[in-house]
Picture 1 (cartoon, protein in one colour):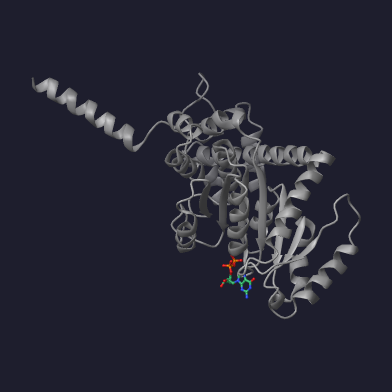
Picture 2: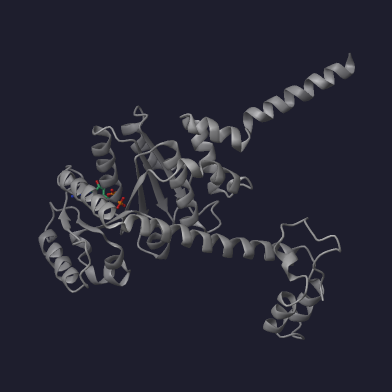
Length: 353
Ligand code: GDP
């Protein structure tokens, strides 16, 4: 009787834990069946680099490749959020399913907890066709571009036709994120007036479409002219980068912007550049993940004390650092360093020299 009670408790406990923490594979099948909560949980897992991340990504892989990604980037306050909302609404009106990933490298918040999200959700919350998520550096171990890529892929597998990524700011992270998109829209405003700054930040290279937002303000036409002038100096490619004027707040210029995005999509499809871009993104992802994972495993090996003696020698200046690196990497059992922790060769694995 007593044992039975214990057993029942244990089962209840396990069952409860399953409710709180479902298996990733279960989440994937629920997500593929249209469960938004499962999608949200999976996003949290890949964002935080949950140990199941590779399994999740492999499971969704066959369901990916359909979504078209639009990256919207530019300085803070340029009107990106407003513009993304307008674009999302435009796409929804045409019955496309839309995902939005707002990437803020400077924000300590993530997981949809930022105020902006809530305000937006009010507009879209009844609309099952839009899924909005914020990402920040917290939890992503600095791998914001990686996290974004994985979240985009989840939204793709979920069945989104378009995924809009919005990056705040103009740093390297933002450029990395922007490069993931099929079409990159760079948003500038007249008062920034600082096209030179934008060019320095590398925005000219990544823009497929330029938007001068807040066209209701003075200087918009002049900025647009400046941009067109700069674009003319660029080597000709098959795509002529348009410079468009919008007033996102009033919803002006959105039809034209959306039309140009779809035109760019057609252009990519025609010129097979989309496949080339996708291949480049995948290759880049592979390289990044490989380097990241190797680094992580080597860190783990260093931390578990296997090289304590050598590290001590490095600390004391007795062994030159590069020499120490070579001693580890040129050792016969160096490959064992790359095995996940706890998986050593039968002979005992890599040992300190
Ligand atoms: P983000 O930081 O680039 O995402 O910019 P937001 O979308 O948050 O917009 C920043 C501010 O500019 C907000 O107060 C918007 O209401 C305002 N804004 C956005 N679009 C326009 C526009 O076309 N004209 C004017 N005058 N203000 C705008």
